[in-house]
Amino acid sequence: MNIQHNISLKPYNTFGIDALAKHFITIHSIDELKHALSLENYPDIFVLGGGSNMLLTKNMDALVLHLNIKGISIISEDENFAIVQANAGENWHEFVLWCLDKNFGGLENLSLIPGNVGSAPIQNIGAYGIELKDAFVSCQVLDKKTKTLKTYTKEECQFDYRNSIFKQEEKGKSIICNVTFKLSKNNHTLHTSYGSISNQLAEMDIINPTIQDVSQAVIIIRQSKLPDPKKIGNSGSFFKNPVISKENYAILKENFQDIPGYPVSETEIKVPAGWLIEKAGFKGKQFGDYGVHKEQALVLVNYGNASGQEILELAKLIQTTVKQLFNITIEAEVNII
Image (cartoon, one colour):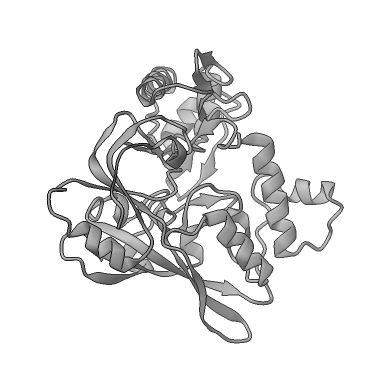
């Protein structure tokens, strides 16, 4: 096992923040992970996956473990479903493409989401009407303290909107090593009504779409709205869409007649954070080497050499302004490190 020192984390986070890791190890197996966690003289451990849902605001004095455990396998299957397990270090989008190549359905709406498989359950990734939990069966987790493995079922993960037990009581205590999904093999249930998927399929002259067609439509839509992290540093949606009461939404509707809202329960409405940020005047604004993306106000971007602290200060300014204008608190979706 090779321990490196003073390693730049710029290639390991999609924001492209040039923070330093004082100590750094690439992990290729669960056994290596257990060994790394048992090393003496390294009391502080930080686990790094695909680096897609984080903003580094400082150098890391901890031992950084880059989780690079690879492998995808079919655990079991019948004529209708396949149970598929993917290890934590697999790139999420490449895993989705692997499933589509096998004609396994259920993840196509989650195409092109950045990051790795191991990070996906932490915030219950979602897009275009689908969330990870919809196809999730279980995940295998290593307890950092005891070095023992435990399997978490869907119920035990306590999935919610962009949330799970791994962002709450299990935060920092355990490491997801692999994730298991139940995927359809035929009679796929397509989700094309959310957003502009149906419009995009029409533009593609597709009347009876396959799961591969839905994936391609999602990819085209995402590429048109979201910057490629390989070209412009970003972490996708920086903020969660806030959920407010119907009463508060009705009050806002009186002052902002065009405010969109989507019912999530009998008493609550989800308001697009991107709309709030755009109305607050931040869409497309650039502050030196960082700013808000011109096509999607939810996305904060690093145009080159911005620091994590600069981007964090911009996020705070946006939150303050939105609160003043709409009396709505928008929370960061990304992890601030």
